[in-house]
Length: 239
Image 1 (tube, rainbow, N blue to C red):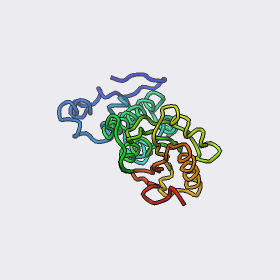
Image 2 (image 1 turned 30 degrees about the horizontal axis):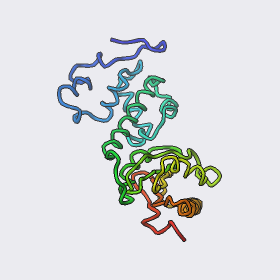
Image 3 (image 1 turned 90 degrees about the vertical axis):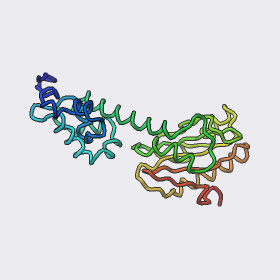
């Protein structure tokens, strides 16, 4: 059956031979038997007038640079690829599914109220959350006196600089929840793990303020891709 969408007739999965339909193949053989394009085709459901849903899925993966790159894209970027058959509904569906996958990965790596003992403990939680973001996020991880996680809070979104990330903003929530210590966290969308001069200066300023307030800054973690840099591990917290 063909359905009409935005004035254009689009081929549905129901038009395919049953043994080629991704949904039926998934039910018969299991999810691991399907390719990335087939799984994506199940999400987008229909193709365009000249392409099946799998053709559209392959085009999405090809133009985006593969599944990993697709996972880094937002709704507007997917929509603006101008792929035939991919409108608002399909772009939103794909972005929502990929976000659920990221949240699942983060949830699996995060225990309830974990105790932070090492930089790796922080990285394990925040790499899945931050690695695919296109903009820079600066966060504080607030810890109890025994280093059990209380909560995290976003301080700034956008370019990291001292005019935006101030001691007042960094320690505001820490004071409100009576945190015993904090960890600074931000991402580098560029993929560069090296801290900038501004990163180091800002961190050392926060270390001084934290010491004066009896809320020590234990570390500053930079997430870039699947890797991370720890200021504490590299001896960068103090001069």
